[in-house]
Amino acid sequence: MDDARGPRGAIRTKDGWAVRNAIVTVTDLMGRQATRVQAGEDGRVAMDPLPGGTYTVIVTAMGYEPAASTLIVSSRGTADLGTLVLSRAGGADLPPPGPWTIDPVHSSVGAVAQHLGLSSVRGRFGAFEGRIEIADRIERSRVTARIDATSIDTGNKLRDDHLRSPDFLNADAHPVITYEGEGLTETGPDRWTVQGRLTLNGHTCPVALDLVYLGTGPDPWGGTRAAFRATTELNRRDFGIRYSQILEAGVNAVGESLKVELEIQAAQGETLPEP
Image (cartoon, helix red, strand yellow):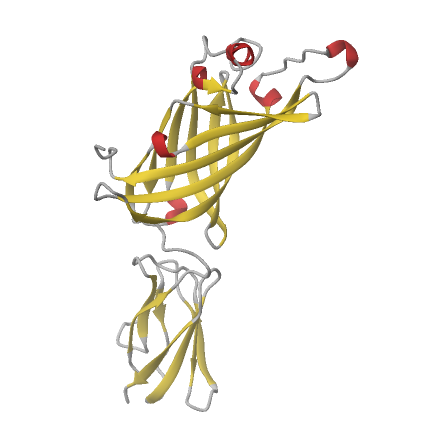
């Protein structure tokens, strides 16, 4: 359709990203619907010509607060909607595109497993690094992380040494745990699913992270930080970890499922700022 025909415009977020497939409803001053169109994948809106006059434009999109504006259409049926900005419903502005470096000092990688089916044992990895690449289209963002398997810490040296052994992490043979996230799917305001692959104990399996975005703000070193919380549940047998200490009794000393809990703070840029 020629740009000279009908009103044209674009639907964007506050940070300039396209809002895909937003619904744009145009009503006359009596509240009667004049037209209703859907924005494209690039957030652009194109309408057929309208009779000259004044209209109200209402924009809605899943996960965003509705927005309204006034539209004045010329006698030729054309008008410039400009850029209509939507705010995310109940959410914070997304971090700007580009590289973000995970700060291990202000982040944590933890795990919870059941012991004897009665209580939970919590552990954390003390050494890890990672990078987040925020794409122009958030769904195409990527994350990579490397965790030192030998840095497991449950507060008990005997148990930690056993966890590093071939019965569990086999850290001598596989000292690094890696995760590669290959895209995001929005599941609600500030909530996403990260699709990725985890390599642990020499086995690689698909693992999805349930991610909550906590917001972005300045840090004391003149930079910008973004915070995230993520969880997932693993079955240790998927990664070749089949140890059971009480096989004769038919009881697993360590539960098969493992809940992973991540608290991540990332600094904008290729490297972390000097403290």
